[in-house]
Length: 261
Length: 321
Ligand SMILES: Cc1cc2nc3c(=O)[nH]c(=O)nc-3n(C[C@H](O)[C@H](O)[C@H](O)COP(=O)(O)OP(=O)(O)OC[C@H]3O[C@@H](n4cnc5c(N)ncnc54)[C@H](O)[C@@H]3O)c2cc1C
Ligand SMILES: Nc1ncnc2c1ncn2[C@@H]1O[C@H](COP(=O)(O)O)[C@@H](O)[C@H]1O
Image 1: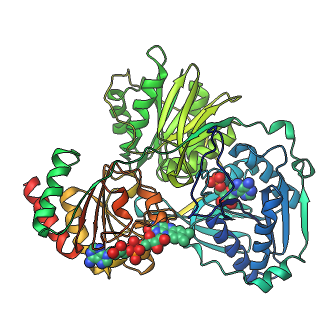
Image 2 (image 1 turned 180 degrees about the horizontal axis):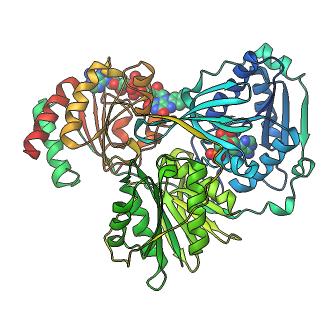
């Protein structure tokens, strides 16, 4: 079985996000970049499937610039077998459907049986790629997966829906799975592992090498500007009074000022 | 501009947030153009009837056993059929777990653009322009569409108002060829609570690590019962096993947008605030006056939540009398 895991480079969750002075970009200067947190669950799941199924190959892939190489290598250090960097040269601002088309090209070129992605990238917060890949490949997709069981070419996945509903699906591979946080606990890639991972096979390809027609990759959705969320006015904090009195003041304010009760 | 709205239901109950999308559709469509709704489910006649008074001119329905439970293949086939019949310029839905699963698949099927989780939406001629939170709400992006015959968009719940307005409300059954679903639903498990989902709740009371046990969450549930609120939790409380994962608010949990968010014994980490900072009114209860949560709170009480919560519950009861 061949598993393809897609990871995206995203800012660390602690990063301060700064908008460029012309409002059209996010400054990358001070930002620390990481593997999108949900993609670590995807990588871990692929490795666990490989550990249970001899002869499985795990390919760690990303569509980005040269700087995603070190993140792919981190995935290899966790236990991936081969790295694939798909260059986004000239395509850095592609919209999600464009990205999905490039990734679908990679899936076909690699003849993967199972694709693992994160449920959502924490930069664009889209949740698009998993379902889109399913459609473009004409495969099943299950996104926001808390539990996955692979049994030969059959699989069962539990998807977290609203109100604590868990939808349990059965399906045949090939399929696209979007990893949620409860899926597993990602292992830590230690330094010696990273040194070794640098020697693992690593390919760099262009979309055209994967049979993707660059002409079909025109963004249909564009970010024209960024803005900061409105600042909240300083709140009223009560302290040092009797609890009863403080609670009474807050309830009154919620009723009369904020009008939410 | 012709706008089609996907109306959500679970267990044949209308998801109220869908009416928000219908109201927005009415506004951006302009008076001359028509608004259509599509409802997919097991038995949905009463839902279809309700949509007239919220501005739907045409209501497409696809009902029957194969639509009883959400299945992306069957539901996509039904909405696709409605799109084919109505030829909309814009297809709107809500940024709920269902909407976020269905819409990207539909957008790819129609080779169309999609914008997700919008908090503002305007029409500009035949185009829509949206505002979309990114980076867990640390920045908002203005998004525009180009080179797409259909524009797909989902809206964040609780942001737009669900206004009543008149539509002609003609109900049309659409015939959907059975989709060859590659997914088979084995089971839909529910946790015990019948509470409104966090992402749609208008009041949320969340507890943190300081609750100290699953049992202690009872004092939050007591207040929640009075307010019709949903109880949430910080990741520290979830990791400690005091609360279930579905209750987690934040970067790696749910993004919520209630009218009132009460944070009890939550410090206000960046990751927690990422999930709740857009709440309209925030109340923080914390023993530490320096806790970061007070920086984004509209109202705060420096005090012990075990003393504050019971008094709060009592006062709310008196108010609701
Ligand atoms: C990648 C990543 C993702 C994360 N995602 C999330 C997420 O989605 N959601 C999330 O919540 N966290 C998330 N976290 C964790 C986050 O960093 C914090 O650790 C967590 O939010 C802290 O939870 P807390 O406020 O309950 O606990 P603490 O930070 O320990 O705060 C407890 C607070 O309770 C107060 N307190 C103590 N006793 C009382 C009392 N009797 N009455 C009143 N107040 C009292 C204390 O003063 C303190 O402020 C994430 C972290 C990382 C690294
Ligand atoms: N540029 C990319 N390269 C590789 N994988 C990606 C890329 N963008 C998104 N993904 C994958 O798709 C998932 C969902 O992303 P999104 O739809 O943007 O929220 C991510 O968690 C990644 O696994």
